[in-house]
Image (cartoon, rainbow, N blue to C red; front, top):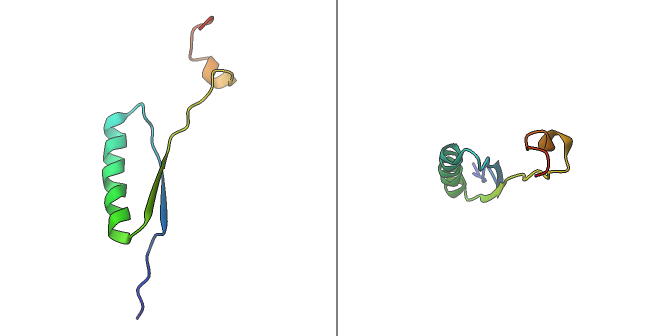
Length: 62
């Protein structure tokens, strides 16, 4: 029986506001990527102030 890679690429969203959780997620996904020979890709979304939902969290005039 031929064994292939389970994963080729792993995409991991990282919330930079929770650094402890991000570090834990990174450790675990790095382990999985290394064990399976997969590429590990990280991303974090940085919202802009012009988005209504984001602007509501900041004081006016900022």
